Image (cartoon, rainbow, N blue to C red):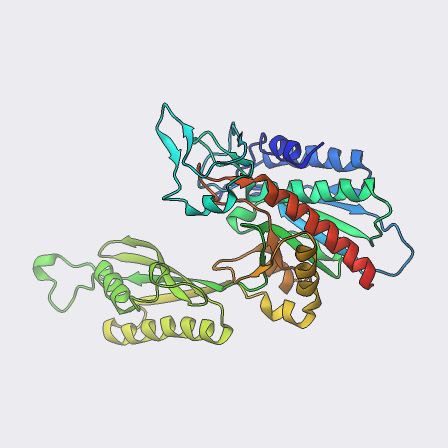
Length: 408
């Protein structure tokens, strides 16, 4: 089976996760792909194939040499984003892409235009997999799944290529931030791993945001407005006051690269009560801590103004910059760079302006940078996947396995 055939099979499964669910996996339909992959990996000849009750799938490609070699792993997630439907995906291959706009649905007037998506220009002459304009494609992250499975199949078919123990892990619920929640790092048993979950060809990421959420609950005092002087505290106005104090040039819309931000994600309430919600992001741990303190200082100052207990702040750390855990074992990055180069890919190291399961896994004891899976324009109907991206990612996995054995 070719890598394209695998990918097209995987996207036929609807695996959309659900933010409002409190189960794991968040949707039972994720099990259908997990069960298919369990059977596929078993048929290929992998061992220790295990699908647990939470939808985490683990498998092993045993070492084919007695040489002592570190056990390494490759991880991808099976779910797709709640942002767009993943049901009844109808992929189409645009062969030898000509560099022009791609009509997804002529009747509905849905077009992926070069003007809006200039990254298309980088893939002229390549075969590109697109949607019909009514669902996402699912390259995030079924391309990663296909690349890992194809690499394992290739290594089985080429025993002359020596490698150590390779572990495979496929997870649910990454798109809703829970992919690492119940991942068993100890059972996975690797010295390091890679998530295959990035974008365009060559992307290599081992830096991400430090992240926290901040919830400000405001308790007002409701009094008849005709008799409210010096008595009423309008919680909604207090919320508006809080927002105006926040830095207006430190938002997602005004920052890029390594610049951090405060992002207002929710505002609700009235006279008696209001709630303001933010997420806090920064690559630098010191600046991240300063950002959290900045919000705490605003809450303290406003409580002095409106009365102690008017505002209550809850800050919850979500994840940290994996660079802190990956840099001490930088050979993991050097290995990936060399593997890419030997696959004919120029590595492009960049920081993630977001999070990744690899970040959480790194702090759980498994250094885990991220390698490109090849898709672009995730989470919507204009998502597309250049076939060479998948092929190069698969070759990168094979090369990492070989180089790990060569270097011991």
